Image 1: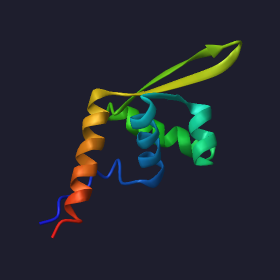
Image 2 (image 1 turned 45 degrees about the vertical axis):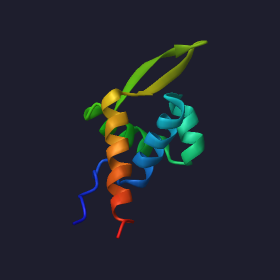
Image 3 (image 1 turned 45 degrees about the horizontal axis):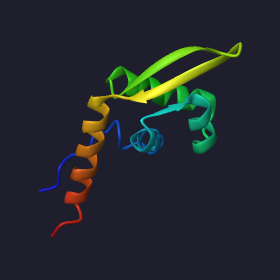
Image 4 (image 1 turned 90 degrees about the vertical axis):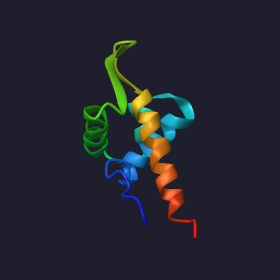
Length: 94
């Protein structure tokens, strides 16, 4: 029987955000924007959705007088991502 995949992670852009964070633990909004080629608005919406379920932490501030947004994966986010990968792998097993 196939397991339901986490709908929050099953979105291409949110999965990309989480994949980057799994690899790096932390990144910036600008780095995610460059990697994803997403618009600022769309990226902001997807980050907000992940933040609302506590998969990520978002810290806004300034760096050298410019707005700076730092994004970190949480322990809950790591577990959700690992579960998503395990569930996805179950689709490949006979």
